[in-house]
Length: 311
Image (cartoon, one colour):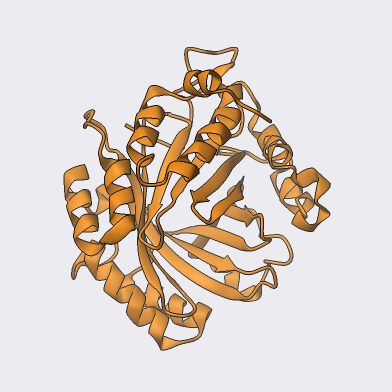
């Protein structure tokens, strides 16, 4: 589908356009692809029958803007999560719409049926979101599935050790390469327990050491705020590959400026420049950082990450 520049400009909120302008000198080709993809994804939102709430209904950001950018110190890339449909669309329809947008209904390997069954007749918080990553190496997509409160994880991720009374699974991330990420909220996750999960999940001491070093950059010597979150990444064979801890930035930091200082002191090179572009908009009196976190993979490579509302 070809989207013309004028259509792209009119389809994107001004804050999104300004953020892309700051990123374009760093990742020109990736930004061109991202502009077209986002104009296509957000086009339906812009044509909502409720235009007065179309750009402020989403749970993705604290102002309701239906797009959030994400950053990781692991690579120089433009990452984002967007709403799949306008506010008048029922939440239980959003998963099917998102899958069609990605062309997944024609790909049986993605096995959406168990996730759709999980949502059937249940109260949902957002239904589904679309995720995308744009870099020099190419583009990748992700489908975020809203997990209803109290829902049991479907096969093949219904592993016995994932059933814990302290872990409340909130979301699943289905990747185009068939890897799977599960996201949980935990009310009593302290640093010792988190590092225990890291050891249990990744099966080696090196990842735990690397994760603890990253946690120190965010938390200092204080314990983790509660509640906080945990995500577990599996490959297509359901083998553990990475673990991430996250929480709201405002649970750790005084303001956006303090978050920026902590993150920019911890990274350099191109990832630092991408972060500066994402966070470089003028303050508007509201938190721009959403979640902040630290992750590690099975090889011991670790990173910092955060979500940023476009400004």
